[in-house]
Image (tube, rainbow, N blue to C red):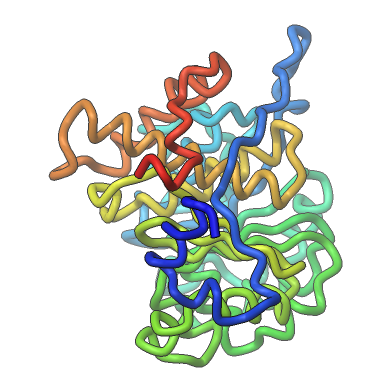
Amino acid sequence: MNLAESYLSVIYPSLYDKDDLLVQTNDYIALPPRPAEAYKGAMGDVLFIAGAANYYGAPYLATMSFLKSGGGYSRLAAPRSVIPVIAKRGREIVYLPQDETEAGSIALKNKKALLETAAKVDMVVIGPGLSLHEETVTLVREITAKVKKPMLIDGDGLTAVAENPEILSGRKAPTILTPHMGEMARLTGKSAAEINANKMIILQETAKKLKATIVLKGAHSLIGLGDGRIYINLSGNAGMATAGSGDVLTGCIAAMYGLGLNADDAVRKGVFLHGYAGDLASGKKGVDGITAKDIMECLPPALQRDRSGLINVCYYNPVCV
């Protein structure tokens, strides 16, 4: 056992409980070059289905983080009454006003138009701040089953599909799930204690079963691929345990796909850059009190340092930690 394996076996003893656990650290993935003749459509065209009454932060952070991470065209389908509030902060976002339920969430009758838009974009993101209104939950399930493009499901979208996980395993295009521990518990039907006791194996089994790439968020977030591989991410810090941080991650992953990485590499790169942006933010302000917006604002310098080769090798090497 080398030093890196020894380190990981102490952090995650279950690494060596099974011979078929393929675990490694989330090592370096090069960003695709940004062509001098690039235009916004070539840098990723993503539809975000997000937001509900009183849930303004999640859709804003997800869509703006996509742009801050180098994404080109950010479309936000949100309830009609929510959009004016978000538009005051995000003027670069393209807005698609949606008919609402009485509770102020996206109504089911928008499904046809949303599917038509989804067919024209590169990726669909669904879930941030959507709410769990029954009609909107139905919309999420029906859209997830029918969209033929890569999908990233986060937040309330994960809760919506948790009761019908066969929707996910039946999809043909890449599926990305970004649960925190509570959402992972709902997806698997297991308690958080059960997952924590056997985290690696449960992540591996769930990614295979759902045919999805899963980011289990937390300290040293874990990335489980559908082929059984698991990556441990070493960037990030405790200050990132703050409301909206996951929405920033969602936008960053979508941007990595828009820049030209395949779905699995986009997840790995997005998770790394999100954590590194959090480290830049904590370096400026300390780990106490950094916000999701602070993390988002550090995404451009994170990408700049990545492209310039200025990131310390310890971010990929557990022996340094």
